[in-house]
Image (cartoon, rainbow, N blue to C red; front, side, top):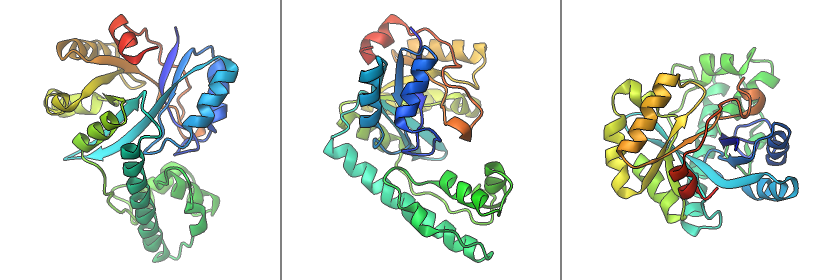
Length: 268
């Protein structure tokens, strides 16, 4: 069974529509995928419909952005996308993202850079990548990376700090929607030496797993993360964090086999 449980579409900051995501999965022989857009489930119904038509299993997903002393992303799987608790929190996050985007545009205007604010009226998840694309289209930068380095990154001239959930709030939101909460791309926490503390702080509140398989993980790191999953009785998942043309990582390029326990918990 081939899986990719970390994919982004145009509903957030990916370049491919939810339908195209499923079509690509079919073309690549991927059996199970999850659409995990940032702070939105807007693309999930379209992906589910296309998955039924093409015979690709689509797991309902989301990726919630959180922050404590460092950035934490929590993946949610098998969520109820109609959950009032989830959608209320997502709407709150959407409004905060839009407010942040306008503050960034305000700062850009001090450099005589005027972008079309109507382009930020997005039903999905508006973020800095969208502004980077506007800067690129306007000829103000040479690439998305250039946009982040000059204006949008933490050292950029127009940077505005985000107002996010705490990791605990992210886990609780996913659990309230009946989902499985999985710590995304945990290598950063390994490098900081805080992975065990983070897991111990979140597991009593429902943390279900860690993303052991990821493009930047070496075989040694992956093995260590599987051992961590066994230690804390967590599921081990994996995915490419595919964003289409936004990032040069091919869908399905992280090859991994799901263990029996994780497969049972994920119901795939």
